[in-house]
Amino acid sequence: MYRYFILFLLLYLSCNEHKPEEKVEIQKSKKIVIAHRGASGYLPEHTLPAKAMAYAMGADFLEQDVVLSKDDVPIVIHDIHLETVTDVAQKFPKRKRNDEKYYVIDFTFEELKQLNVSERFDFATNKAVFPNRFPVFTATFKLHSLQEEIELIQGLNKSTGKNMGIYPEIKEPEFHQKEGKDISKIVLEVLNDYGYKTKKDNCILQCFDAKELKRIRNEFKSELFLVQLMEFGEDEKIEEISKYADGIGPWYQQIIKGKDKSGKWQISDLVSDAHKYNLKVHAYTFRADQLNDFETFEELLQVALYEAKVDGVFTDFPDKAVAFINKMD
Ligand code: CA
Image (cartoon, rainbow, N blue to C red; front, side):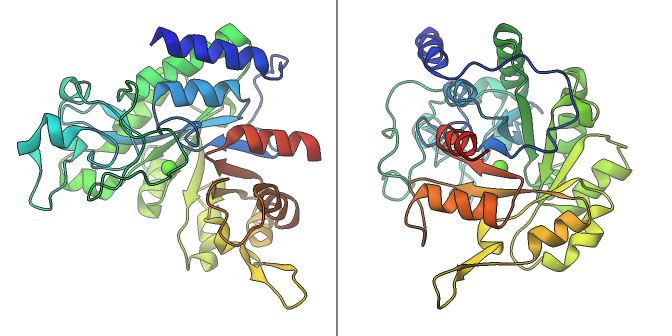
């Protein structure tokens, strides 16, 4: 790990210095940059080095996707299965289920720690999903728990005087429930243990499952800032969402709808509707190496942040989004 801390130090020295911030209610006015799975455009997603790099790049929040292990340890990983970002198929070939997948929930934390983590690859072809990113199965990266990541971030907050927020996502609560586990209860306990209790504690909790997010607010009485992630076709639910959440997390293509005949980008009503109900809008996922119909990454950021007026972006390239916002604001 030490070489990564040296990498981090070098990066930190090359980045802008920030003044220590007061503990304030989650930045309401400023546009925010959320490091999507860390600086995942540069290092394998959800590894601690990718988080340290995103921290040094001056993101406002670091994202943690959370899935439970067999022994109820919250693991920071994007999918409920392992084979597209680890060497689980080599290390534990017999542990796949009938669907050919290796589930995080079938392994203890001690077993998960034995795996090596790679840049994301296609399990059928072994080819990288993003060919220009960090090479597949190169260098040594490991899985870690939510607690380990919070300790890294809080440690860096102490040593740098910054106040980086965390942005955990509860993954597939219904799947966990079917496996006999209450993931929200476990995640909320960890957050509470590390001092994340109210909207002032620089933590945003996100989930796609509306039933679960309501449960977090109403049953667990959580006072955290809650974001309802959205897929297509849920635009009409804004009023309902505003009853239990503080923000929405839509895909940016729900907001930016292609160009009209004159070449102007068409913006949906989703952001203005959300703002009417006092909901923040943090859109996903902004990738400099996946521009869809945009000419440049800056154009995509410009349209989303300053024409559609989203309040924050989930991005694999936090350095580029931070630089762009600093230039614009
Ligand atoms: Ca996520």
